[in-house]
Image 1 (cartoon, helix red, strand yellow):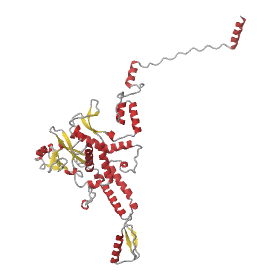
Image 2: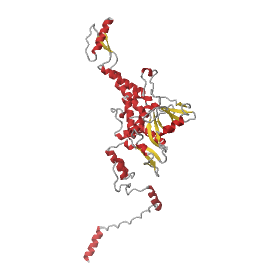
Image 3: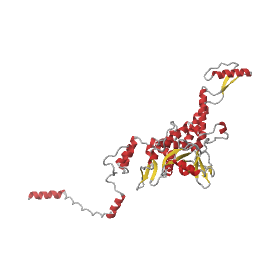
Image 4: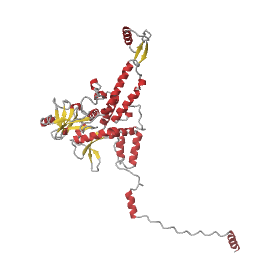
Length: 445
């Protein structure tokens, strides 16, 4: 990496004499995420990122968020004259967004980014530049091998340890903050130190693992709690030892025949009495809540309160994914030093998929309202190519704009109509006698 030789020559006099590690809790310490109680680490019961990940609920949350972020298409966009972000290409910035480094695709790169952020609360990305100073490669570093450093003048550096894939040599190195993209969240104790959700749900993950371990031991012993043999009278130690050896030699599921009037009495509680299922379910809810994942996406037995998957996806996006997507976009915009009007943006259409009926209705409503052209609706909702005559939005002819109505009223104001004149009354019909006399006169003449 060309940038590293320059960094080493510049920083030998700065670090470690004038730099000190940033004080923080639970963010960059490489071993323990959180000690659940005093002395837990002496008993090998500390909460580590790797042991917490062995919990099914933790693994599901971390894997779900990481893969969902990675499956979204990351685009280079530019702001046009109308203030709209449209997809763009640039020979300086597009290549690194397509292939971040020599060992990872963009999907694997984003997965690694999110795994580091979710398990450690911090993601450290080392930049590699060409002779022009343009970033040409990005490497997600092992968070256990990175420590933020601060200098008395307020500048920030990062201590890096050996990382062969990232090209870090066989020595410790300190790089300035401008060469590191540091994406972090839950900065509760220091602005440079993030916290993993495991800080809040680590005890629940440890409890869940212990419940699973206890259940495995329980069912390997025949699904019965431990017990003891009670004799009606006192027995000598040799007899007690002989009976104990005989009992344990049989193993679970076997029938024991013992004398001396002994009877078996269970010690402990069964799985039903201990409510293991309810307790384990509570740990799953706690873990899902800390990661912001809807419980229905972790436990399939918990049905979502919505009738369609789109509403669930929107809730999942707003409560869980949106903060990560916004953080990655902002970090890449600043880290790649994108000039105006460029930026990065995830395509959310890859996350929120509609069923056929919903897509058809949405496209129909958009075209009818004049919000989209037929070709735009074909591309967005069905992925179909444009057709002739489909590049114009349509509206019904009887629709009038408010401006047109105002102009019409200004040119010909509506006048108050004049009152109607009274219509003449119809002539009265002549009486029948007069008609008969007139007819008689005509007959005589």
